[in-house]
Image (cartoon, rainbow, N blue to C red; front, side, top):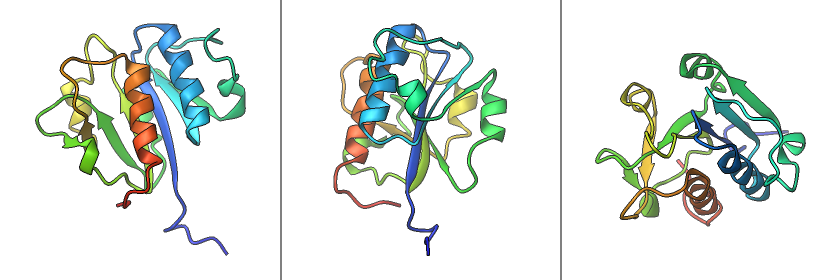
Length: 152
């Protein structure tokens, strides 16, 4: 019998992504690093040449026109984790990833809007002098999730 309190899953996506190439790279990383699903909010992109593993066909892909529509469909019991360089964000090195969560990244040039950060259950950041490419940032988050660290 499944114990739903021990089962883990995560999804990852971008709100108002800047380029379709970044999305394709994030999808490829998500498939390789164990994401259960991927999503976009706002800008929507078709098949990407850099998604050479065709992740969009391998794991569920969801699209939401607005953050509000996304938030209304957040899986029950999942924690929303915003990835943002913000003084309120926890350091990734000591962050305990929730067992069931959804990671949300913002556009490279604007990040996550304040109204979105307020809705996040957690904010997380990692040491970087400047902002990183959104696909790289998402890949670092997923890599860290796969390390043998405690879960919350």
